[in-house]
Image (cartoon, rainbow over all chains, first blue to last red; front, side):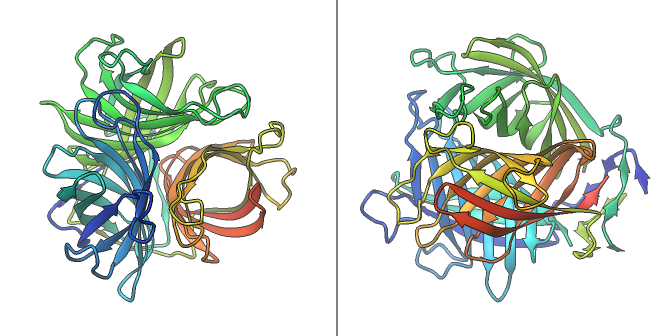
Amino acid sequence: LAVASYKKHINKDKPCKRFVLYYHDKLFEGDDVGNATSAAVYNGTGLGNFKFGKMVVFDDPLTKDRSFVSPPVAKAQGFYFYDMKTTYNAWFAYTLIFNSTEYKGTLNIMGADMMDEPMRDLSVVGGTGDFFMSRGVVTFQTDVAEGIYYFRVKMDVKLYECY
Amino acid sequence: LAVASYKKHINKDKPCKRFVLYYHDKLFEGDDVGNATSAAVYNGTGLGNFKFGKMVVFDDPLTKDRSFVSPPVAKAQGFYFYDMKTTYNAWFAYTLIFNSTEYKGTLNIMGADMMDEPMRDLSVVGGTGDFFMSRGVVTFQTDVAEGIYYFRVKMDVKLYECY
Amino acid sequence: LAVASYKKHINKDKPCKRFVLYYHDKLFEGDDVGNATSAAVYNGTGLGNFKFGKMVVFDDPLTKDRSFVSPPVAKAQGFYFYDMKTTYNAWFAYTLIFNSTEYKGTLNIMGADMMDEPMRDLSVVGGTGDFFMSRGVVTFQTDVAEGIYYFRVKMDVKLYECY
């Protein structure tokens, strides 16, 4: 099977698998080990006023509804950092880990989170287990940001390669 | 459609999309917020003499020609770090962000930058928007390195999966 | 060629390429530049007792057998960090670099290393050179962990897209 390159059409409205999850990031404040789900490993450079360089490692729960205390259906392990001097903007790389009766496996994700945009797309670059070799797109929407210690993002995960 | 695995041929000389861009990295010196496009979040370990572990977060412009002040056609947000003790070598993960009349969307890229090689290949592992689900290769060539605060890399982006 | 999305079957038992390698990580102790292959760039937050946030940059050898001093057949350049507060767990992103008579090229890998599991899968998200455009899965098995300065992981690299 020889091809010069791929020029195919995939219908963006018809992912082969899709789920909407709420991602909760509760940043460690120093005395809340029980509640915190992430922690800063670097607090930022002096390049501008939008935390340029601040880097956070996370092990964050994902729930089907908006409640932080709902039973998580997956978790997200990875990191993000802020990377603009003129506004808030972040870059993410992480793994969605499923370990439930419904799904067992992981999805690996990376991309830019242009926080000023209402919706922004990151890439699902691979998967394992029930998501073996999957690829797709995750659409982020900020659901709420409460000060600097808690935010919630709606993640709409759409897979276009399912095996 | 059942396949044991993929063994296909793609002609490396015929990408379905290609563009050559110049990436400019102007490292923050502490007092040049206006010009700087990147900043170190860690200054390196003592493992060898080649900045092992030095980590830089960037929001760097890409231009069609070599001039730092040309209008950028895209930007690159992400990070790199140095990772060899016997020579300069870096590892990159970043997102190319296009927001022009020509293209809107992102390409997600990662890989090793073996700086001693004249040309080195990194992977385009995913894309969004006009680059929905794209994959390919980016070839780096150092164009100039001026001291420790500025370097320019020619990035030859070749996509072999276009949708 | 128009498709709504991909729903294909790949036989997980029949990768188009496979190799088993041993990854050696010898963390820099401050006075062993000659032997060390990695170095911590951050020593961890106080979130729990399992090095949450500790980040390590590495240039680690891979060998065909278990011996650290065997001739490496590849090297791994990238980073990992610990990301759980209740147990040891890490997240990896790195490039496998081959430069031998057998293979020349790179494989780019990312994913979660759930160290309590006997086997865990990460994603091969791209490749270059002899591994042009490859994708697949890497299965990690901890082979030995000697204190905090040396560990060895068996990496079973299985490619399911070969071009």
